[in-house]
Length: 112
Length: 112
Image (cartoon, rainbow over all chains, first blue to last red; front, top):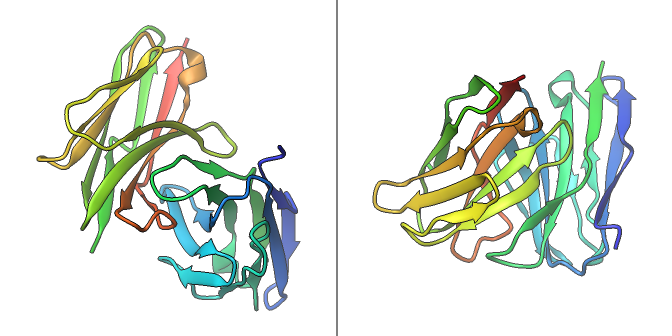
């Protein structure tokens, strides 16, 4: 199993550009989540999904969209990048409630 | 508002020391608390705690939960330089496994 994979590893955008961060898992997990990590702030939940076709907002959803058309994939879209979105983004998946959550390797995004 | 607070935010010790990291929480409908270790990449799972007073151990690491006083501690004995990392705790509510709430993290540095 590859586990949770994310692409790209690094990305630099200009303000106003859009892009999609890719996340995939091959463990048939129902739950998938996107977090951002900024210095001194731990992990903050952006959006999450409890199954294909079901998504919901986390703590910091503004400026981001998600969709979940398959169990395996959970892309995160930045509609119009802003410098405040400079961060490290982690995707995670989980089999269900009360289980370990597995994280992808992260994407480091810089918005100029 | 749900809240997870870790202390201290950073800690510097020498090899061989014992450290105690704290995680307190105020969360409605609490179900479990999870500890993760993060070494410059994705967080890796350490423990999940659901019951008060039952210690979980893995080598030199151990953790316990107090559901009455709403906190958990993570102990590391005989620290090594490889223990240097950010330690994150997260809380899960019943039937909301897609929505972990993380604390800010404790950055531990172990000097030789």
